[in-house]
Image (tube, rainbow, N blue to C red; front, side, top):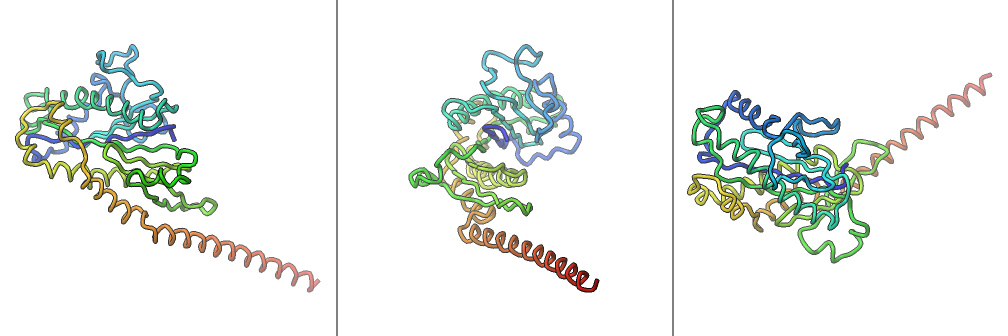
Length: 306
């Protein structure tokens, strides 16, 4: 994994959230937004999770201005887009001064620019049904959040004070590999981000589960809560978006509850999974020993019969 990996899941708000695009509308939107004319190209890295990435503004023909600086130690930014969801994936190839907090601030500034100029403005500037069907599809705001994956700091689990500063708990990731113990990750949920600290790599499906949980229990929940205010918005403004785009304690608790119940974070689940894994390994070892005993018995019988 990268030194620091940060996802920014985004949920767009339209003038009419009941508007449903057909497959051709979505295809045209993706072609318009995920193209080199918009500073986005097909992903080139073999380990890319998403199919597109931002073009680095270092002499390339992608549109840019003085606010489109590429942060230091940022290896690449991958992009996912479908209808009303955008996900930006930031990969840092080296730690930056200030650690994951500083990286989060870099990502928040950069993603705000990318979301406004690469997506919102592009969608809202399209006319004559190409590809947005009509004005109901104009973006008036969006909700976003940060999900950070970082190596667990040395001694992080040893200090009680580091575990009590916010919603911090453990989740277990069961591995199908016999020779590898189940992975235990520490999760910290706060208003600006959810941080997952790991000692061993976090699996692909766990990342997907956490991202979907953020959409379901935070972004959609906040959008529903702000419904009356959103109906008053006609055009996009960064000020209105930043005012609404702040998670609240209720969203944090909802994500906490889901993670504990569904992602293996309950204490009883942690112990149960550990015991089951140990029992499975013991059983497997017993089968191997039994097989070896059978082989030895057969060899001994052959020697006796000679």
